[in-house]
Length: 268
Image (cartoon, rainbow, N blue to C red; front, side, top):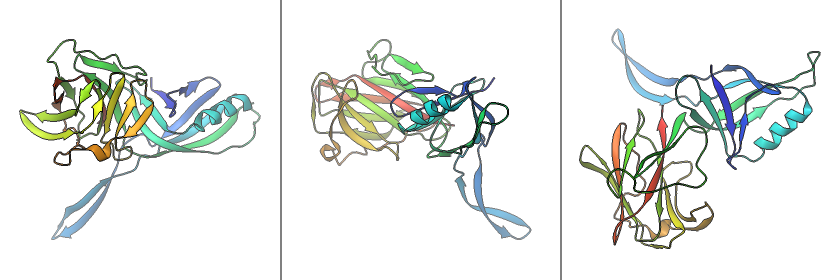
């Protein structure tokens, strides 16, 4: 049975399978490609291909205005992601929505057409640390449980998606000039380094998602401290995409290895 969720920027979730607020008749959940072709003789040659922007739609059926108001208050927080699950893992679509509103009909339900305007590709959200898989499912971990655990200290083993994928790396203090490197098949994919000192209780966040790109310092509970982009080591790549398949991220500073966790958008 397929399931739908909506998550907002505050980390709250709205179950779109509720009896009093139900998403029905969903459409546009697949994938598409826009193609440019040139005819050569009796055949055609592909000259360009771009991924179509996802734009799922359907109808929200509310039991009354109370459920409708609850939904619109939830949506007003912004930062929306549509979650979709069939037999596999949850996949997520960053989006904005359009919601039509009518009146309660003879069926005593408020039926509203809804469109989810995709702001990026569908992706599976997964978390890894030096100890292995941290969280896999519907919610972001609000407080990261990070430890070296099993495996090599300072090494995060990551399984990427089918395509090169952006990631968000969290490097925890104390650390002096934190650095990171991405490896695949023993070869360096890219490196990064920031010239700064992280105290205990602080973390450096490096996000290579084009829509959220940043290098910034936060407290471990997610409060913004300051941008550290200007402190970058400009001789390094910094903003790196994880290659498809399995790879490794090494985390270190001037004194050795440091603790880290990586949040991966595994593109599907």
